[in-house]
Length: 240
Image (cartoon, rainbow, N blue to C red; front, side, top):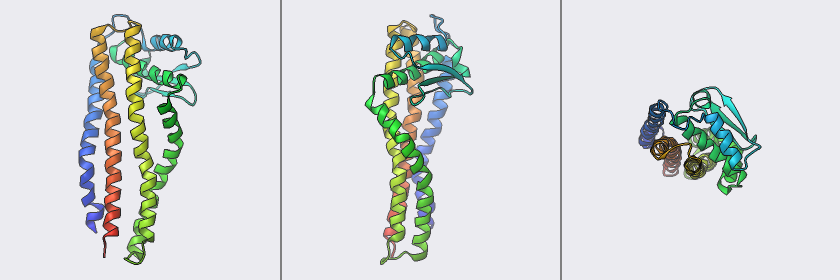
């Protein structure tokens, strides 16, 4: 039985290592290019207002938010939040990150199907992720207490927990192309408006690619957790 809970942990190790590396990569790349100001001297706040206006997103409010790399766009409130390290900065990193969030706003105002799907999945995933582990644990307890070849009630409960958790993996799978598309839009806008020159665009692209790796890592880790739960379920099903 130790295999069920500890042996299956081994499948998570590659994903966790990749996740740690991806977070280090985005932080180090952002820091590297945050020391280089764009020749255009746009601040992230001013540039965001300009990009949003040019793309018909006049209803979007741009606000400052505390923290570092906490930048985000909330499609439900139509608010674009720029972190303290980005808002007033004219660095290549800041402009790249801010343009990425503008890309999300443009997605919303151009009725992106993937963004709509992700927005729909947010509340569903939140509920599913909260219930998944408790339900799976309940299934394990029931299987240990009353399980057997003639009774699969515990494994049924575990299966329900796995299905609920799979919503997180589906959410991560949908999120990745949404983020990649926002970055493509960002680079296109930065080029079209000459906010960054060609050399600066390459550096901004490095920042956005590094950021995308964190979403790849989230998908990998979520998929490996799902695999681990499936291995646990199969272990119980194959018990004598």
